[in-house]
View 1 (cartoon, rainbow, N blue to C red):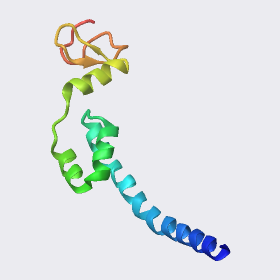
View 2 (cartoon, rainbow, N blue to C red):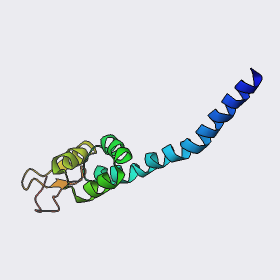
View 3 (spheres, rainbow, N blue to C red):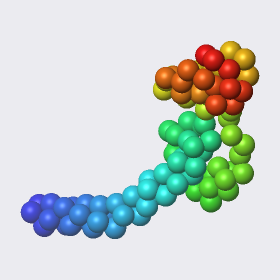
Length: 105
């Protein structure tokens, strides 16, 4: 019975030491398309999972997708930017003159 236990422990250690690095690589590679898509206003977590499962396709897809303008604008508005009431361009929250149209805010 001790031999069986030793063999089982050895096989467990072998499978962890062999398969752990193989499973770790896609986890880190999935960050690349996720970061690219996140900069374009997409969900990081969703694209990370997509990158883990289908890295090459997700990478190409993340490079060629268009920016989600509404999502990026909402993110900037939540971070303190504001919209000029005259030209509808985003300016810093502390601005008193719009840098795009030159009117007082």
